[in-house]
Length: 225
Image 1 (spheres, rainbow, N blue to C red):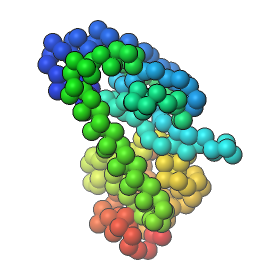
Image 2: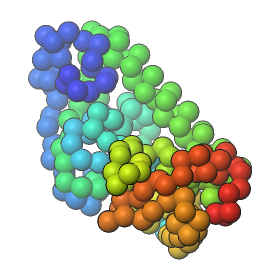
Image 3: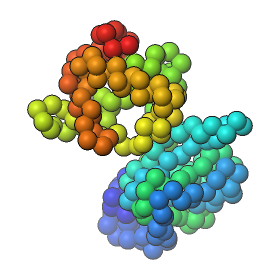
């Protein structure tokens, strides 16, 4: 419980109390945790692994909305409104979750109002991120979206340059950026040909020119688009 941002404002004793009503759950890779239309009366925290939240269009096209990592949660909308899920939650890899029934969560909030405040803060951040991504999708060209995405990944230093690793398969990154896998691959090749990135092993990518990528992310041109 101490690792979950929602409960970090509680004392150690209160966190132990919360743990008594949490139900540990393990999920397998590619397991559909719940689907659109499900009456999900649970709040779910990712403990290990990652979970993608996606919607399926009438034409069968999957649009990834976000990817949850350790400490993040889903199911708050159903808790607050009682509405059925309008999305799918799928495990991207084997992992574990802590699950709270809505009835237990309601009692926790009555006893510890700070939990509700932190939940609202998390929802506000998520809404802001969604609005920013929507604005970028509408107004920014694909080169800018790709550059901005790469710059937003967790970076580390390797082989004399900043290196990032795609957290998802390219088809899933393409879905997040509202493009096709083919278009994403073409754009990455252009960035590589222009010397802005250096493809590495697996999903690793070296960011060879951070200033040029930042210019591209802001809508400028550097010969890559």
